[in-house]
Length: 118
Ligand SMILES: [Ca+2]
Image 1 (tube, rainbow, N blue to C red):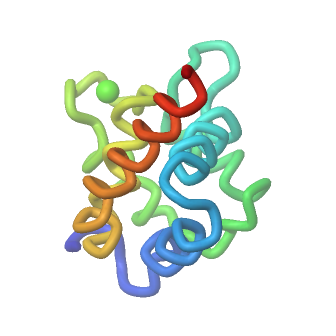
Image 2 (cartoon, rainbow, N blue to C red):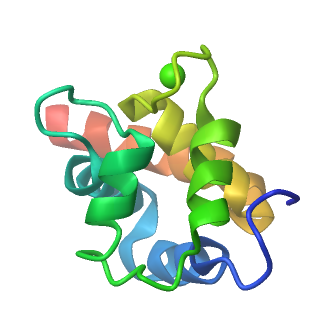
């Protein structure tokens, strides 16, 4: 994945989280991550909120240009900020391994939903 520099934290972190949490748990965690990183007033992730809140998640190693890349690469509709969907998509795109398995996880999560419903 180009753009988010070498040693990007998420690339290493996500597969580990995925193993531990399973698909459903991972998606929930990603959404929690969004809540933590977002601007509480605007309810989107901006470069500013990312810079401020990434420290809270222990991501202080992310450099300014990596934060800029994250927002730029994740921003699908070009409004300069990441909404929850854009954030989750970005997280999956940052990890090729996750990308390959995400299909399986989504099915697994869906299956779980159906089980809970019955
Ligand atoms: Ca956007």
